[in-house]
Length: 263
Image (cartoon, rainbow, N blue to C red; front, top):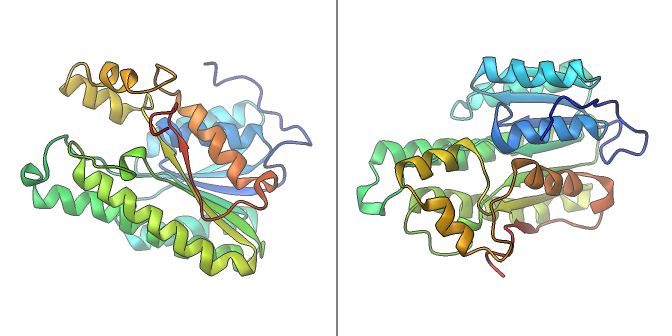
């Protein structure tokens, strides 16, 4: 997939004239989302821990005609998260939409072999980090755009037993609960909150898992009716639609983007 294609936004882009904040934007689904949102007309603020990766993605977007800024953000540090959201408002004057995609994975294995410090790290980033980001984003949307949308990245592994990734699956299930609660709470204000639940997606996290346990991707593909893994942009496309005004009556849902794995 060519990520250097011109990003000059069409007037009818899904996210035309919106300011979008994306976490985990240095690679994988987050980077694909940042590129896509820019192509769809958004001004994008990219956040993640790796400054080099962020700078590279933001540079690609700007070189292709899009608008992008980046800010280093450790989702395990609440002050960092709030400062990153504030930066989006400082730079572009408002916040319309946010994609909370950043997460910490775990080494595959049963829960009794998951080290406590690893469980704490997954919880701090994948669950608490999303909660902190949502609270900051809701405050920013209220204070500026007034109405908006948030999408959180969940996982199909949160929708069933997940014996190989029990800590990660539990954290993503908690994200589903936060998503539903926020949708019910902030819907009356015109703030929609949804989640995407990717299935097997060709991210660095998945490739590392497959390297550690060869055959993992092939096994997961055998359980998927479409018979293949997703490209990160396929997940980003679902997030873009949920954030757009074309999904104006959709809130509180966890949209599976899984090739039919949970059909």
